[in-house]
Image (cartoon, rainbow over all chains, first blue to last red; front, side, top):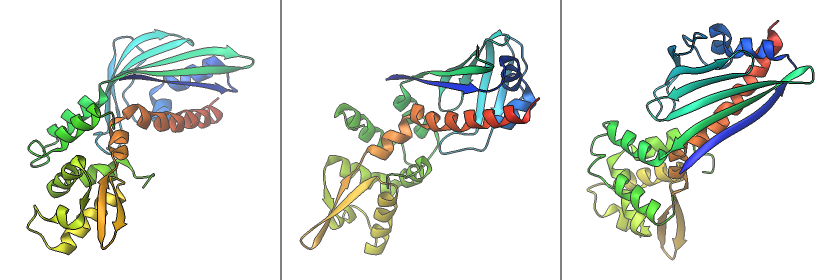
Length: 142
Length: 106
């Protein structure tokens, strides 16, 4: 299973302003999550939020690509996923079109199974959940 | 049960007894008595576990004569394992927040 998410959004603001809001630490903190982002290729940083479900609340990122007012690519890695995030920006009328691509979702079931195993829930390894998941997958029910 | 949050499902599978119950139900339908059999546990305790599983949407129950018959519903497990689906909702919210941040910014 490999999945990608794609969102196309238009905003009534010029690309320069959208670019500023997606590449400035304070703005990112306001609309996305608190972070130590720097607009520099190769910069490694984290987004930090409250843990939800099995996610520990931390996203590890690296800036892979920066084309001012056009494109930003980040790695997006946490204790549950290892993915990539791409922001594409283009003018549309007097505003902007933002395309967000979240890619690289693959083998999530396997990742989550090992994640649950690694959580140290007592007895998890010895009980049937991993077997159950494997069987349900084989039967096409999961 | 359609709206069970992944965290409910995590809670449901965090207990060894409930995991064993799910494992039994993975093989096939079971009555409450059959589900209680492997465990040294009072009937109310068994019922409590089954209620948590039902609230998480992991099991369905139907009446057959005097018995309640339980079956496994794997859908919530699927949702927990499908992180792409989780991020669908996450990004929709964040992109709206981005729009509001833009409106506030000069």
